[in-house]
Structures are given as structure tokens and as C-alpha cells.
Image 1: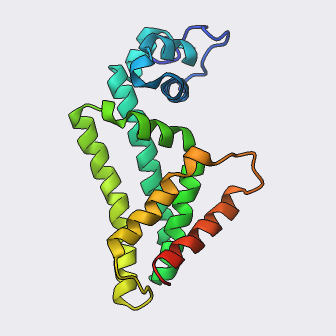
Image 2: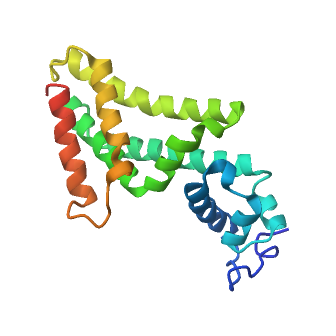
Length: 205
């Protein structure tokens, strides 16, 4: 069975071969954001994606699996973005903190919808999925904390409370999806620069 063979013309056009999974991700993101986890129907997600129910079940065995996959894909994207940002910036704690904050702000702007869904709906993850997602998020937290701790050890940061500093920086970045307007005069690059400056002030760089 292929996703293309199971496509239906709910939205007036067939899903291109091989793109059923992408169409489902987009539809699920929209409907979970609009209606919440419990208000989202697996049938409505399939319809929004332009797929039959049997095609949806080809990609995901249940609404829970689809929901968990959406959140895990988003967090994996973030971890990979942080890794890429840190890969070429050397070992200077100031530059590393600047890089990871910029990557975080960029991610929160790019994936505002998924970030909002996670805040509102993560409690609906079943235990197995919740544990896996928690491990992914912990790896990102550890990246932040290691950079700040290294900066304190090396005298690059004058910071009496490194854990609280990290929490303050992450909380500020995580709040961006709640207020950021893509149509505003401040673009993602400038916003990233501003938040990097704020983060460096918090740690006393």
C-alpha cells in the first residue's frame, strides 16, 4: 500500500506521491492548534490532509501516535538546530551561548504553532511518549547548562546562580510564540540578536 494509492480528493486535489506524511503533519498541526488534543478528530485530520482514513492509518496507528510524532519531530528539529549552530563556533562560551540562543529564538519563531501546542497539550501524551520527549528536551537543556557552567568556570561569565540564569534565558525564549507577530517590524534575525544580548547580560558576560 502507498499513501498515494490511498489518497482521496477531500480537498479537491490528490496528494502527490510520497507526500502523504507531510500533508498529515500539516493538517494535524493545524487541527491540534485549533481544537486541542481532545477536540481533534482523526477523521477531521485525514480530511484536512486530503487523505482517506486508511491512508492515515498507513502513516500513524492512532491519534496519540500522530500527536507524539508531531511533538517529537519538533523537538528533534530544535536539537539538530542547536547542534548545527554550535558546530562551527569554537569553544568560546560567549560565542556558544550567543549561538544557542539565536538557534532557540529562530526555532521558536519558525515553529510557533508546535511550541504552543506543546505548552497547552503535552499533558495528553501517554507515558511512553512523554518519557521519550522528556529525554529529548533534557538533552537540549543540558547543552544550555553546559555552556553556562563552562563560562563560569573559565571566568567568561560572572554568574552566581548558573541554573537560575539558564532557566531565565530559556523561559524568555520559550515565551516568544505567545507574543511574536511575524508581521512586526522586528524580523527573526534581529530578534535573535536582541535575545542573545539579553542572555549575555543575564550571565554577566
